[in-house]
Length: 505
Image 1 (cartoon, rainbow, N blue to C red):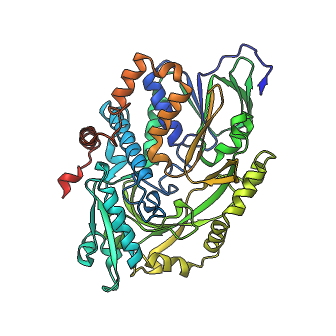
Image 2 (cartoon, rainbow, N blue to C red):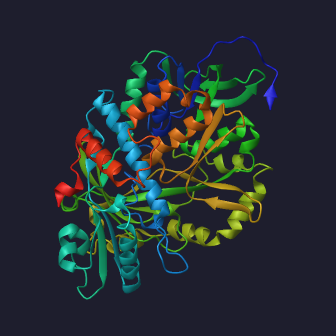
Image 3 (tube, one colour):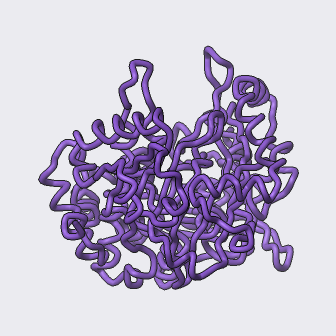
């Protein structure tokens, strides 16, 4: 609804709410495309990337669909649907191109600070699961995005890939694995902070930490009036902007509701908390160097796919297992227990109730997860690391995720597990809702936002030339062009300091 407030108040061209990977990516792209833009960033915490973008909070680092089995579901005819995996793999290649552009132009720090080669491995046991993985492998290698994938059912070969996983395992048990050496570990917290460090040095960019958005209203002239509170001194003020992007992770839904745009009506959020088992034994950590993903439990959310995960955080190699799902009414790790109750409105009550009734298996799963004892958590770990000792692991709280609930004309409401950009009819406000795969596909998501909300500029020759400089494959399909993919991967591997998979075999 338009508000009758047209006083001549100067303000930025763009306001980015939330200092995570999404806002950092959009801010960087906009400043490269049009350096004259005035941008302000509003973050309620005292640093960037302190919520879902932080390495300790992020459930996935470098999602490229190489090993995540939930991206390749089995269809009723027993064939494997790899369409989502293709889309995610292509999106990750687009992200790498943009990061390579930033590195090549000395915009952000050296690539070893945020990205490293790390094998991506799928691992299963049991005859039915082995049959599934073999079918998945056969389907995926038909696409050139996954040419370098290798498959094995050999205990000895798999022991060479993942010694922790195979140590102590029954040799008569059917097992299988796929491996992609082109996989990476990405520290999105380090990447996000690096991008914001650069943005702070740019002219016409201001970052406000410790500032919370209280209200959003659109005025008659189309601009947005944003009421902000300084959490350090209590001061309140209004900021006026032409464009607003809400990239506040789990906090995006309440802000979308405050904007009062019709397109935001009917959306609800289902918060899912997470925990990790974090390895404290350096000897164990050094024996594992891979991301090993298995199959999710029936009824569990995609973000809860179990994985034994090597990460590089603050210059150190770490090892985590999980995540273990849980339930909290908070929408952010540092949020309020009133987040969920306050988000329930007349417009989204029916979709939320409908989605809840249709997802009772998920509810039961979360209850079971919350009730798990330390011994039960270690037992789950032993499925992937049979020799695991409880004294080598400690429980750590992961980030908070809010899954999308949206209206459905037939079902009343449905629970979505991806990400979605919601924007107003005049495209002056957009909000990113949802979770996985999120950060890994941030560049593709922001390209879609630019095409929707800056359509009057994106087709200009100036922007088109710059976009193709930032992302050499822009406007072309990597999934349809093997030669283009080879060129792009060679370029990004060289600039980002990655070793192409073909050289590692």
